[in-house]
Image (cartoon, rainbow over the protein chains, first blue to last red):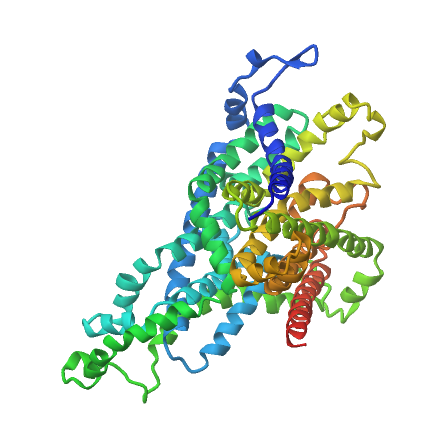
Length: 271
Length: 325
């Protein structure tokens, strides 16, 4: 067993690390409540929630959050609908040339946004995809789908072939087996993929900055970006806006963290 | 590696196999019509086709177009005159471009170097056998990873404001001479932005290394204990060598992240003051969408793609090579 000294040192060091992460976040929430100071000491009676209302109205954050939700949900659904069948085929079926196709898709995981963003802008301009929901969903999906296929393939390879075969014996088609047997079995894998893609889309900045010029359809991250440039000196207002944008993701993280982290951990070992 | 689990299930499959073999020879239209190995089975291609279509139209097409644009001096509107290699040459000769490349070198230290060291250190502590409550630390340290970059920069703009908490506490501690204009200085702002990047990235490295540590067989640690190895020795003899694969992934992803650095810096300084914190991605954005040098921006995109692929290959080669040696 670990010595008492070592145990205490570990806790001390980790606590220092946790504090460097948590203190800035807690201060953000604190500043958002607009504290005033009397003689260098915080007057706790001055804390209030008014800034959240002001930030919500001034930054049009309600629209931003709704847009973020639309983009994230649509991207997750599109990625899942595309990646699940493809991962199933790559993971369980014989396919001539399948290796090559899979490697091509994997290279897609290495393509940085910056390598495609410029031509994408001009393509979307001529395809009328610029500044509408479909365009950003398509771009986000194209950039997540390689990961999705890779992720689902490594899950489907762990489905024992007897399960696939016995389902076939029962008269299920492969398509039916996929959705009625394999996907329910793989709910944890699908969940983690969905959570990651949701998070990436919700937090993404460069893609919407380029592809969604009209403010009515911008996601919350972009609106908060504009907002902090406009109200750069109104610190409480900025903080309140940031808390509003972060809240759904942080709550989701706290609720799902066990599953999310366990999923990433198991995926990271395979990868 | 997780290979044992499927093997066990496969041997269990002996009970099921015969049935499926029987199904193969059993008469009946449903089974007979199913294509078998002889004929090329086209169904798998149908499962894969939609992904390839989306991938092709929205990723490969722009990628190829980008390579084409990079050899032209297109301004985004008129015809695209052939420019040969001049866009690539100016990446090396243009002073702002060069500054971007030099800044990338600094950012690699902050986006990749520091997070990997810190991640390794914290993962080694969290992954120690016989410690309790480690789930809490794991969750907290990963938290910056789930925050949007906009939220991150709002946090740090507040903390580092000229009259913000950091400068105030420095004054209160009698360290007033250390107070600085953290985010508006020619000399230190790039480093400060880099540190913010480290703050975000290290939770990711930590989690990756933790995954690796959990896959290291316990016997190795037991053996080290029997040999009377100190915790530090144990780290260098058992933990670090066991993390080779995760090290390759962490290095690849975080170095590429440093090459791509955009959000945090763009939101705080837009590359300033002056051009002191420009990055290749910020130069690309300005070229493409401010000064309409689409050709030059495309060339930068191609260079960034090339650099990412080279880094991946080199790191994978290094790690694999050492494994064989």
